[in-house]
Amino acid sequence: MPEKPELDFPRPLTTVDVVVFAIRSDALQVLLVQRPRAETEPFPGAWALPGGFVDVAGDRDLEACAARKLKDKTGVVSPYLEQLGSWGSAMRDPRGWSATHAYFALLPEHATGGTLAPDAQWFAVEGEKVRPKLAFDHAEILQAAVQRLRSKVEYTSLPAYLMPQEFTLPELQRTYEIVLDRPLEKSAFRTRMLAADLIEPVAKMRKGPNRPAQLYRLKKAKTPVFFTRTFNPPG
Amino acid sequence: MPEKPELDFPRPLTTVDVVVFAIRSDALQVLLVQRPRAETEPFPGAWALPGGFVDVAGDRDLEACAARKLKDKTGVVSPYLEQLGSWGSAMRDPRGWSATHAYFALLPEHATGGTLAPDAQWFAVEGEKVRPKLAFDHAEILQAAVQRLRSKVEYTSLPAYLMPQEFTLPELQRTYEIVLDRPLEKSAFRTRMLAADLIEPVAKMRKGPNRPAQLYRLKKAKTPVFFTRTFNPPG
DNA sequence: TAAGTTAGTTGGACTGTACAACTAAGTATG
DNA sequence: CATACTTAGTTGTACAGTCCAACTAACTTA
Image 1 (cartoon, rainbow over the protein chains, first blue to last red):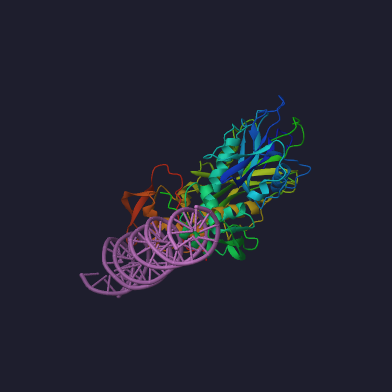
Image 2: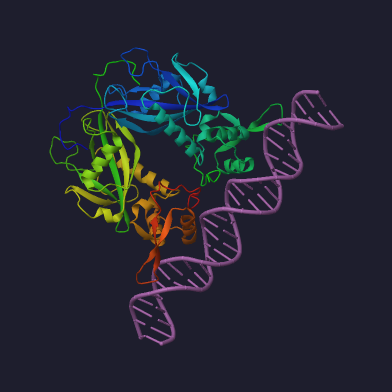
């Protein structure tokens, strides 16, 4: 790392930001917070990803910092937190050279309803964007998060983290379809999921106006399953 | 990002490190540099990933900083530089809370022979490690880089960046096999590569002691190709 | 009882890998 | 100069899993 023992040269600002996804109202949504309106702040009043400065006294490491920021904003512990990447440049923050470590989190819908900070709000993801103009380079970070999510959903069981404890196969397929924004084949989907040793049936059915559906739950504390193919040849 | 306008609280040290891979002597190797022996330095004399502090005056952004560090150590511009992740904690550097932005680069073998800094040296990757004990948490970063490389090689054309301008299909297959550390099926490999619109034949043959092999080159300035399957069902 | 909707299954076509045997083109050897 | 050896490249069969479409199953409502 350093060639010189001098440590008192200028250091970049260091922050952590979290892209929190959930399925709400049958759509992919992301949690944003509104920045304070004080004129002394950059991007006053603009919407931004939840995040903030690393606390060198309080944060053990980056992931703990991200989990803390997430907890502060949403009140829940995310079942899934993955590092997304880092963005650092001289220009992205008007206060000076800054670098942010971005994470993305997946929340089940039922965990999105509770206590939300007053300046936090869910926004639908449209394409790879949201309606409001975002502070800093957060639009770019959000775009990368959506791309990463979509690409991993093609060949992993990530959407399982967006589901409640018990769910049906059609519900899981619907989640995949919302994230990927395209329909999937029913029979191939079922074959894949059931072959993956990922879920197990529970002795209950989901009752609705039509034929009841088998309920499943995730098998024990699994990390995401990787499939050996993508869904539709993306050609 | 920040809730408070105070910017004069302690900031983490910010560095960039690069994991440079190449195939040398029919093996996957990684480029390391030896740290200065001065007692005032952390990990004096230990081997480490090439990298260093972000220069807030000189570096435009993180990727430019990584490219600069790479150039300083190897003298070449890497045809492939990808962000790997970031590691930050209170403990990873004895000088204080620090965060490093790690990149990984792929070099073709012929680019590894030239001017190398006197304190730089190539080491064979054995499993997911190298022989010498590495400074900081660089062993962990290297392990993540090897895992990322291996997993992407399963379903992308990344190894193309490890090849010279012209190469044969058996040579490309051999590169895949070295990185994955397992043999691949010849005919399936050829079918996949030729179907991928990735390479094109040149009007030359590679002559050797046996049957000559068709030479290919990469098609124009392609980003890596993604395949819709992995190679061998990993079960 | 019939119509409508969603759950779930079945079967045939197709794509691409796995495996193995084959042909092709060169060098080295007797 | 024929034969063995080696590596390049092809061919064919089996198989796994998706794609597509039609089918059956279970429930509600009219």
